[in-house]
Length: 139
Image (cartoon, rainbow, N blue to C red; front, top):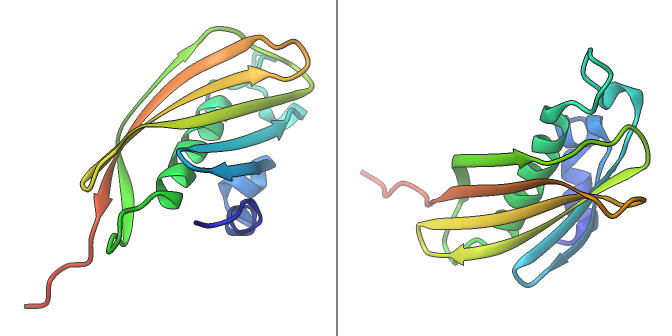
């Protein structure tokens, strides 16, 4: 299973790294990630951009999937995601806990909860379904 440090290194120079996402824990059926809020995470209306929350949760569930791929799998692709936004934050840190709801051979389903660390408020509920990929057979 990849470590938090390995996932953080993967994100350098890519969207997770550019947004400041930091994986803090990789465990059995769970992955935790956080993002310190900065002005560039806001939409033009001044509020936290919904895409920043979705990217945090999508990264958590995607990394969770990678950490739990079945033997022989080569990767995954997202086939569905859903996000319910319940609140916002302008400063501090938002945290995401992704947990596996289903770890199958061909699909995985992950749930994630995004909270504001300082207030404890739930900001979003997220669900992601991934299709597990395998190398193509020769011929």
